[in-house]
Length: 466
Figure 1 (cartoon, rainbow, N blue to C red):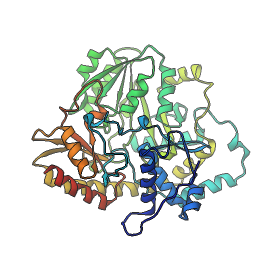
Figure 2 (figure 1 turned 180 degrees about the vertical axis):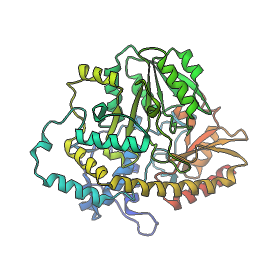
Figure 3 (figure 1 turned 90 degrees about the horizontal axis):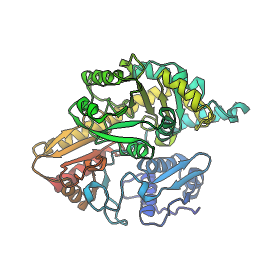
Figure 4 (figure 1 turned 45 degrees about the vertical axis):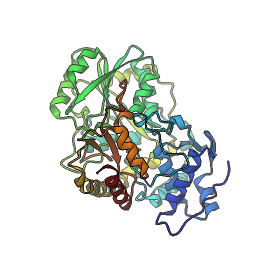
């Protein structure tokens, strides 16, 4: 582990945390920070650079959200391998478009996975941490409940019922360190004789995890309402992985009619399940919140999954899974020996953060913040409407632009990249189709950008595309 020597520039208009983030990102891309190398802690980095610890934490959180680094509990931060990054620089993504030279830093990155950490209540989080650790409870450092602390599960259950209409008891909830772990656990619960259907395009990380299981995987095309039930029936699947509240990456909101069709399919044969990934349902900017698919499930056929990575911070690494009662019994028989993967200290901090109203206040603040960015994006894209169809609006943290005049994804990504703007091709989320050249759609994420960066990026895209 080495110190990071960042030379701050006061006249470039960028915050200190942005300059730290860009420096580390550049060092990783150039290979100066190698895969698996440990980074300084936020405390030591802050002391070395003479900045606040929250500034160092913001920089690391942005790197975490984009996949440049990973966090290992009680061990620190480590550089990820490049092949593990969401956006590869070896030309495999964006329909074969080669990324900018490793030493070249883009001016604006419309990453669909980035989040805004500038409003996070660090002082509140630190205060809760101090209070929890100051209680001197030795029990917090003992082995916890494998499903997660009961009091946290109660808190999560109340939140899910009030915000998403989820009907469950605390006993049905399993808390884990990220959705990756919960999917691995689900494989043990469902067993190996599973044929799983996934939307196409889909969340590629979940697809890669499922592909590591001894599962048969089939993809089902989508229409304007989401996964087609006719395609699902033809797939002979026993489980379907869906994102009905805001499908990634298309942004499709599944209407109630299609949801009921999916539930009917699941009820037609024993052993069929719907895996509902409700990854960013908190961020909806028009109309009333849409209840979860699980809220309409009367027969125990929906496995509900969610995470705090988007709503609080990527580094929180706390997700949850709600099991139908039939699968809960199977979990208790077959997985009782698995230990909890989230420390009891972190669980207690999260419980207090939610239970005392800080989480709700922070969510309301971020909804307002993201809505401001969303509306600015739509306003700035109004000039693009003659040449592009804009979809995916009113929810989530990204929009989609589809060229009306034959512009290929390859051409769109390349021309934007030439002006220092990074956009993301829809083909990165396609499974089993070679459509990089035929696709005409790109994703523009705005969650991690400041308002001025959005304006700058759209100005450059006008020069590139119009």
